[in-house]
Image 1 (tube, rainbow, N blue to C red):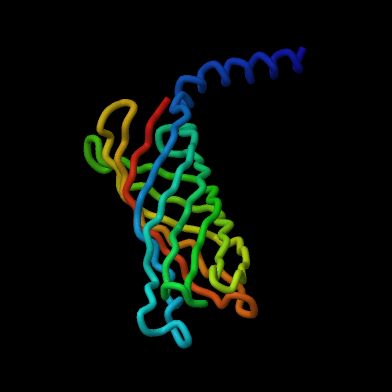
Image 2 (cartoon, one colour; image 1 turned 90 degrees about the horizontal axis):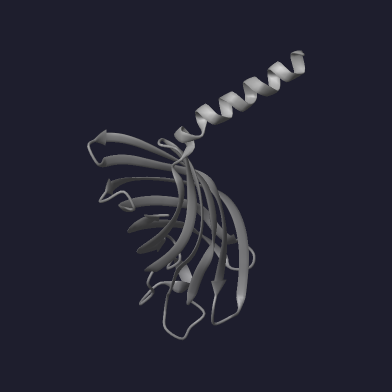
Length: 182
């Protein structure tokens, strides 16, 4: 009898909590600027660029109004000295827990903590490496309508690269984009 009571209580909790968890799935698109902070040091100095345009697509699930999870893939850019060993490009995956904290009407502060798996390649020499780092981010969002949210974020994806193969750089991203709820 105790087992049936526990099962009934669990089922009741599930039915009560289900509407609160109805935040739902969403798709996301961001465009921004990456900064590979020390890519242009030393041998790469001169006409080198350590910034580039980034494009990222992702999706997530908002479990409750304040907490969610998101997975994305991004091409974090390509820059450097044209046609030399200084050319670099980065791309990779990011999986994050998200927090949304309302501050005024449709405006919220957002935060992210997760893991970034980023590939860093020196394109002219075909040297590449992949690293997994703790990634953190902070930003703001505006709820335009029930299905569309605009956001702006700053994210630090840690140090990417390998000292012995490609060299290392700290990769950060400032982006703006949208969330499209299903």
